[in-house]
Image (tube, rainbow, N blue to C red; front, side, top):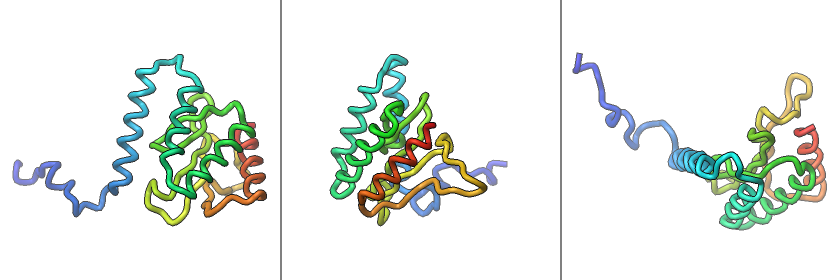
Length: 156
């Protein structure tokens, strides 16, 4: 029986096609976020989440930092009921503890574009198919208006 059992170590080496280093880092960040939330307790307010999100945005390289700052302002203006918080190390915005939308920088998973996405908690359902994430290379005035409208719709 022992011959058929393999140790976990032998199946999780670098050659494994499991999680990437970036994915493992995001999971570690999420675990830290959950621990921090537990330490802060249920009375933690929007101010704690806001400062965490602004600190994470400040760490981003340009042009992602400028885009994240602009998105933060758009989301706060469009849906003041959303609470800023970190989610897997990304700036996110939640309602009643559930993430509604988030910003993923290009450095997060080493992608060629940043992403602004919505979770299944966003009320964007339209027909049988609708977008849940958008690739961002830059933000134009038209893009900002569209994002503001989508965020408002997401929390209606």
